[in-house]
Length: 162
Image (tube, rainbow, N blue to C red; front, side, top):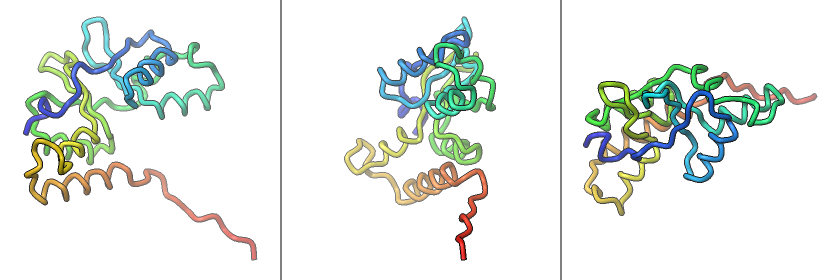
């Protein structure tokens, strides 16, 4: 199965100069947790997540309309896949890079859609069209999900008073 069979298309997107307020509004209106940031030629240049917005707003103590998507778009490496990428390859990329979403681009870098971990998991649900998924698919998806969501920072337990 290829990414184009699972991805959301068209992907929600904004431009680097758009405010984070607009980005957050687009996420709310489209019930998504991330949108792609594109240049004038609709080439993916970054991704903005709801978490990124919340953390930057808390760090800077500024309103969302005073910050732009471009301030977040270059903060992290951008990982993408193509429409004809095998879903298993995309899943491995997500797990390796610890990302839940991948912009889907053409060979020219133009944004075609967005692939989310949830898109893959929903495809594996018993009610989905491909309900004949092999148990290996479930294990692979669960392994990827666990790798993506494992804490990046060491978690220590607070010391208790004696």
